[in-house]
Amino acid sequence: MPRCEYSRTEKVKLRVPEYTNSDISAIFSLPLFREIPAKIKARYGDAPYWLPVILAYTGARAEEIAQLYVDDIEQDAEKPDEWYFHIRAAKPDQSVKRNKSRRVPIAQPLINLGFFEYLKTVPTEGRVFPLLKAASKGKYHATVARYLRGKFESCNIPHFDELEPLHAFRHRFTTEARKIDMREDVQNAITGHSNAGNVGRTYGSYQELHAAINKMPVINIPKWHP
Image (tube, rainbow, N blue to C red; front, side):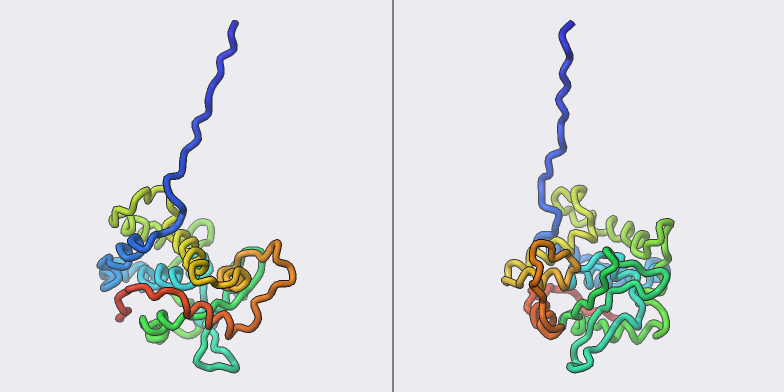
C-alpha cells in the first residue's frame, strides 16, 4: 500500500514584530492619550497613558515598568537633572529577567510630557501605577494590556494579529536605536538584552546612556494632564 505523505504548512509571518512610524502615529492619536475615560481611569489609573509612552521611550519590557515603585525612580548623584528607572527585584512582587537589575534613563521627552507631575499624584511609598493589580500569574501589566490591545486594534494596523501589542514598542526601540547608530552595548544596557558575543564591551557611564537615549526620535504624543 502506498504511504500517504502529509505536508506541514507553516504560518508565514507577513510583518516584522514592531510598530512602524505610521502605526505609532495612529496609536498615540487615540482619544485615550488625550483623556482616559472615567471608568477606565477608575480601574487602571493613568497606566493606559503612561505604560505605552514609557515603553516607546525606553524599549523596556511591559512588566518591568508596570511593577515599578516610586522609589525605583532615582536621581543621578552627580547630575541631579538626570533621572532613571531602576529596574530591579527589590520587592517581593518584582522580578527581573536573568536577575539582572539595570538603570534606564528617563528621556527628556518623558519629562516634557509630564511624568514627574504625574508622580506627584501617587503615594511616594507605593507603586508608580497603584491601581494595577497582579493577575493570576502575578503580572501587573496583564489586565491593562488586554484593554490596550483592544484600543490599538481599532487603529487598523496591518497584520496586527501578528504583533504583541506592548512588546512591539521594544522591537521598534531597537530598530530606531540602530538608525541613529547607537552602539549595540549601549542599546543592551538600556533594554536589558544580553551582551553575549561582546564580552569585554561595556557601556561606560550612566551619563553616556542619557546622551544616547536623548538622541532617539521624538514622538508626537499629547501631554499628560490629571
